[in-house]
Amino acid sequence: MRNADLVARGLKSVWHPCTQMKDHEGAVPLVPIKRGEGVWLEDFEGNRFIDAVSSWWVNLFGHANPRINHAIQEQIGQLEHVILAGFTHEPVVNLSERLIEVTPEGLNKCFYADNGSSAIEAALKMSFHYWKNHGKPGKKNFVNLSNSYHGETLGALALGDVALYKDTYQPLLMEVLTAPSPDAFNKEPGESDEGYALRQFEAMEALLAEKHDEICAVVVEPLIQCAGGMRMHHPIYHTRLREACNRYGVHLIADEIAVGFGRTGTLFACEQSGITPDFMCLSKGLTAGYLPLSVVLTTDDVYNAFYDDYQTLKAFLHSHSYTGNPIGCAVALATLDIFRDDNVLENNRRLSACMADSVAHLADHPNVGDIRQHGMTLAVEMVRNKATKEPFPWQERRGIRVYQHALTRQSLLRPLGNVVYFMPPYVITEEQIRHLAQVATEGIELAVRD
Image (cartoon, rainbow, N blue to C red):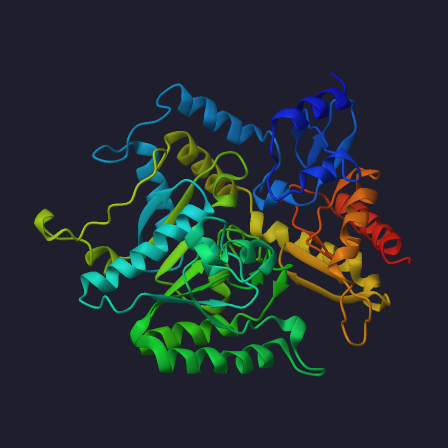
């Protein structure tokens, strides 16, 4: 099959996500993929691309990983799926025990869903329902951070603050309270990331002090606001936030859907703040890019608020058809086995240092406003004016120029606006990282040329 044949067929039948479909009929053609192996994706004509964005941040250990493939084959031969209401199975029990073991201390119960947005929805409902079961139905508001993103379903979308995704649907969304982000991009000259995070926290403290009686929870993406342009902040913010939530009787929901499983340098981003949230939402890397699965981990205190006689109607009546799917759980267990057996986090420190070194030369580029990194996530932000950090107009779509160039150089670099970023599978080599850095440098030069 030729690439063009599959593209033509697909344009007649498939509506692609997060896409203006008219782009695919001209300036931004679809790229059909036949197979993947390791960091490589290959089309129908033998062209290959390094998957520098882990296929939307999900792939941890490469495409067609033999160990994960084997786990799927073993599980399919035993049980493909069973209703989790009233029934259970070994993979979901094993996975729950393993997740409780590796996540921050105190997260002792696992509630499963299908995807990241669904996990956020479940956590929101759990938090509200917790307070209702404790006789506080007036606690029904949520707090987010500016420039945050938590998913595309209506509850999760309401918790976001990226206008591109949210504005169209505003009439359908619940109102939330927004505190300013600790995003270090906006710090003053000479100010440290930590100092700026502490200064920004003052507004959150004031908000909680004033409105805690009506707030269920604060929802945050620890360390990296991924869909908000890979903006990053100092972990001290979440240390202070945990303390404040304790003081004011407000839940803390940590959205680690994109940043969990080693993306920030530790297994979970919350570890760097030394905190245990009341709810931790996980997905994406949970199954290393293979299958949709998500989980909300929570505390015994939350669980016990729902534990009562049936007639009290305090149970959490929330479900998804494929909740706790055995094949997905088997894949997640294989993923955790690789972390346990292969010294992944230590190896990632070497790769992270290589990433930093490979783009260090861009720090003096006149159109690079910022280079930022947490672990295995690195971002380079293009700006019109380096001194003022004035952005290029979004209508110019400069990032797309980098993307288009990268495809000609065996690389998949799908930018976020004017932000070029690396979030590769952990099986990438230093040589491949340096190739991506060279391609990104070439792409940036082309993108800012006029």
